[in-house]
Length: 300
Image 1 (cartoon, helix red, strand yellow):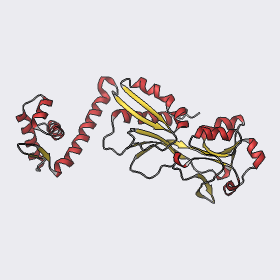
Image 2 (cartoon, rainbow, N blue to C red):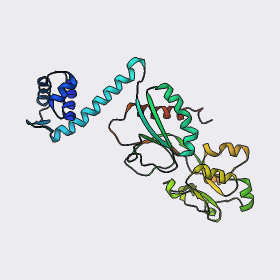
Image 3 (cartoon, rainbow, N blue to C red):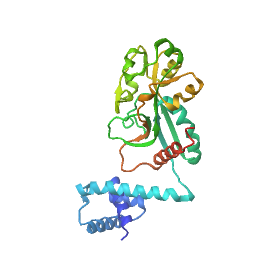
């Protein structure tokens, strides 16, 4: 007897709760479903279902086997979809979130190309500098920049992210150029408010060791773009990503400081819930981001 057909019938019975409902879904007689379940249990040597006149329930072994069957059948469906009609076929809704500034520059512009490749996918983008609880708030994937807090979420590093300490020439002329990270306590530092970021602070390499500082000042904000604008306006020092400030540095609007203490780059990540089976549309989106950011010419 076909092992795959046994697994499919077992999964249908377990999820629909009866042989009759499973038989109707497959378009066969209930007796056919019953024989498949009997053959599966005999082959495995364990009882998977407890059948009474009123209901069908899973045994402990049946519950564990159901998870594996659902994963394997899902993987098979994805494999078939990946080659059907000569290309990847995905459909449905994908809800993603990203930091506001990074999302505007490096997530939103990629979405039209992704949707052009997958016309049956619908995508919703949330931009926020708040750290979204993607599980409880119903998101499929988050793009996150910087250090990741410990969690049960799965993360995939998409690219490196280098951070720079910068200020406007007008600020440095007025307040002086810091020569060591310890001098930040004497400066106005523009920081993300605590509800917008779980970062451990600004990172520097001091005496060969990675050191995190939490500088402060009279201004903080939950929006990174506002901090950037304040920095360009000469209101203080900021710790920003290369992709945010490199154009301002080249134009002379901002100046790097503390270069000798620069920390190694952190990362840009795709983060998604812990799942044995990731929906094809979500997997394709993550693969698309990885390919886009991995292109050497993308960041130039």
